[in-house]
Image (cartoon, rainbow, N blue to C red; front, side, top):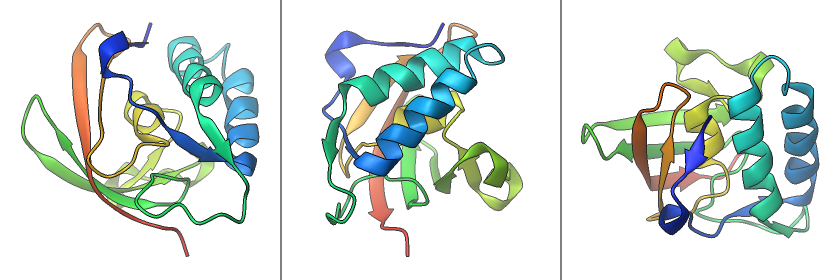
Length: 134
């Protein structure tokens, strides 16, 4: 099961349409990917939800391009956060229905989150930069 470490769960923000769609995605994926779907559902449930038209500069939204650092390796990665059908790891397009994607959604620049992967590995990610989707 993917678990967030309680002291490492920063506040997150989602647009209304993303919160609704991500909740539906988590529910639909519960049978195939129970741990990740449960983690994503928990993130959606705890998020502050804002109106769709409100700008969210510096916050990881769907289709945002972002750079994050994996604190266990020190490596930085630049990715675009997408829905599962648009995922292409080699092109840097990661699905929100992965442990890393679910952890990043809603974070803002400078925030870090620590979580446990389905294999029991503890990961900590820090958002370094975010470009809003076009």
